Structure formats: C-alpha cells, structure tokens
Amino acid sequence: MTRALVLQHIRCEPPGVFTDVLVRHQVTIETVELDEGDRLPDWRDVDLLVAMGGPMGVYDEAEHPWLAAEKRWIAAAVRAGVPYFGVCLGAQLLAASLGAQVRTGSAPEVGVLPVALTPAGRADPVASVLGHEFLALQWHGDTFDIPAGGVCLGQSAAYPHQAMRFGDVAYAVQFHVEVTDPMFAQWREVPAYAASAQAALGASGFDSLARAFAASREAMAESADRMFGSWLRRIGIHSGETPLTHW
Image (cartoon, rainbow, N blue to C red):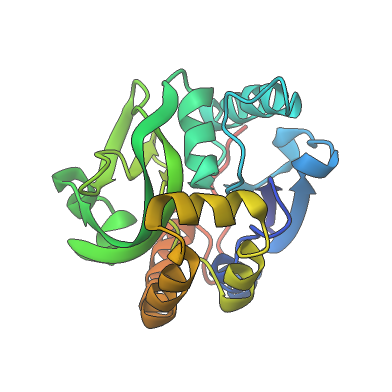
C-alpha cells in the first residue's frame, strides 16, 4: 500500500480534510511530530510527503534545532523526485530547502481572503481545479521567494507568492483550505495563534475570524478535496495505480 509521511510541527495542525482524501485513495498515513522529538525516517522509504504548518519560522533553528535537519531532508527528497505537498510552514520549508529566501512580510495576512491563480496556475494540472479565484484561510506573517526552477501558481492582494510548483510533483500553498471545525477550535487555544489574530484584526479578531471561517468552511473544504485529489492523481495515486518511482 502507498505510504504518506506527514511532517507535523504542532499537534493542532494535522492534514485535516486532506486526511479524508488520503483514506479515500487507500493511502496509509504515518505522522512524524517533529516539535515533539520524533525522528525522520529514510526518505527513500516514503512514497509521498505532506508537510503541514506551525507557529515557528523556518529560520528559528536556535529555538527549534530540528528545523535544520528537516530542511536538508526535504531538499534531498524533493530533488530526488519524491512527491511533496506543503501547507503554510510546509510551503516555506520547501522554499528554504531549495535555496529561496523566507522572511517576515510587511504585515501579517490573517482572514478568509481571496486567492487568485496566476496564468501558470490556471494552466497547471493541479492548481487549475480551484478556478481562477477562490477563498482561503490566511494566517501567516512570513512569506517566501520562489526557488530557482519553481513556478508561482497563486497570489493574493497582500502577497504575490501564495502557491508554487517545483518540478512535476512538488507543490506548496501558503494558505489553508484543509482546516476542519475541530482544528479551528484548537487553534483558538494556542497563545501564538490567538495573539496573531488579535494583532492583525483587533481585540475581537478571533471572533470575527471564526465567523468568516464558519461562513466559508464548506467551500474551502471542497477546494481542499479537489486540489489534493488532483495532486494525488498527478502523482499516479488513484484506482490502485502505482505512484511515481523516485529512486
């Protein structure tokens, strides 16, 4: 059976809606909780990688020394052709691993906001299923450059790099569409997340964000299902097909 390795950086950011898509495609899910000290396996034993978000930055190696090893591991896997899908921090990790700059942006982007596909995104076999514009949950202060050989697939009013592809099978998005109701409720209890919502949206920021999320949750989940399912088909996982060989 196909094996997906989930790189998780905080317990409250699992793959969410993507989990259901993986199960539907009969993919076995194994999780490495890096912030809790789990060790990375040999990437050659993994069929596909899913890297999720977290409150830390890719440059926070002094506080989280495991980040350095994770970036080297991701670089080796992706350059060898292992299919990769990154979300938020997972997108920044992909960029940094491939030599691109990741930095604090001009202002935090927090809210349920529109993302527009670039011309390359509208022509891309995975991103194009989202339509020319769609709503997504944004919750980040950092942004990334597109690495050499990468293609920008999406943009927002605040940040021009919202989605990218590297090679044929490595994809990453800055935004969230995979978040479930239980996940969102847990995020409220994370001090760093609550503080960022308040800083970006004001004293009642989390309440207004919760209302916006509830209003668009179903549409975002549909986007997550379409996009992630399209990526799985892109790497050959559907109807019992064998995933792409990468070694």
